[in-house]
Length: 510
Image (cartoon, rainbow, N blue to C red):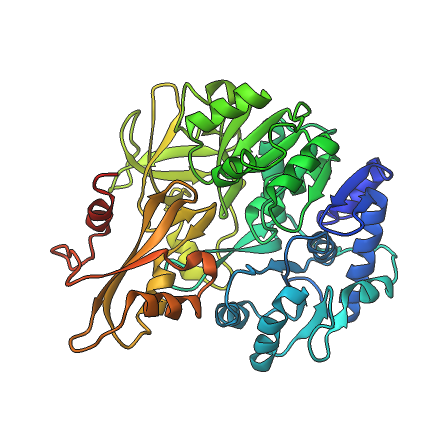
């Protein structure tokens, strides 16, 4: 049992304990740690027979399901790198990712059969389908797994610094970067999470996509290491989530504010018993005080506000339940093994109540970006601090607050949206002369995109045509909600588009 063999270690301590429930299956899967480890050994042996070894990338394009964890644990045993793909991306975007990560095998579900067919026309690799009939020459996942030996397989020279997974961030330069999650990072995040109040007997329901750091690493991996039970669902369904919270006596739940809002309008909200929940964690955006008060009053729920990011942790800050209203809007205080500072433009440390860039240091930082040494180097300063791009400050009690984003990124329904990716697509349109994408407040999604476009002289198009153009080339969640055709964009003396002025222009009167 080596460092990456998470399930074999957990099986040693609690083989018959319920480890996973896949509530997206019909009938549901309920796996003990022994059964889960058997499956991981089988898949690892088959992958090994196909030449997969240390450092090789194995990709998966599928809605949430236990097969994501089959693949993660099998890759960990071999020292291979689990590469979960954002299924909201178009096949053109996925092809770009393939061309710089070079996966050797792709596991996919039938939902994405058309995208995979397009991909395999341009990129050669072994394909395995989870359901349906797959594509040409693809193999059925379950048959492939069950045909292999369940003998133990490990990577004997695996070290803590070796990479376990790639998690994709939005591309501030138009192409998503792949953060390298090492086994060391996983271990330190687990320690931060345990100190954050996780026990050996917790039951956790995951509603985050498994291609997110939230899906794999916020609680799912710490739960395995600590021996708790994790429940998976295929996609977020408020009524199903409430039913599972009650039926399985879930003790820990995490979601983004949009999801918490949707739960309160589900048909079973009034009747559901949530008394088993020890606490709920919210992240992605500040949790509105009225929503905290509703959960507290109607369901006696204790909330923790969290803050994390793909490249660090992901658990970085936590706001205790007793501070949820008193410190509303705060992301809390740094987790135990996280050093957080605020710096000015000269990279000098600032004191309380002074706004500057949030920088982070600690053992739960990622190993930079895959195949991108320049971006890896630029992200960290000479003192070893990772620059987040968020403008923040902390008060006299050490509670941190996000003031603004230095980067253009905005968060819509819990998803990071990077305007540069959208702008890159808009500039491919023959009529677009200049464009800027901004995030605007939205009561349901937190923020939604608006594209501000200046057309070339003697060229014409419509807002509807531009929205259609983007829809054909981008993941749906990235497509702005609206387009405004403008005579000109506000430009600084240095020639930069003043996005803050655009935001102010469209939020006046809100």
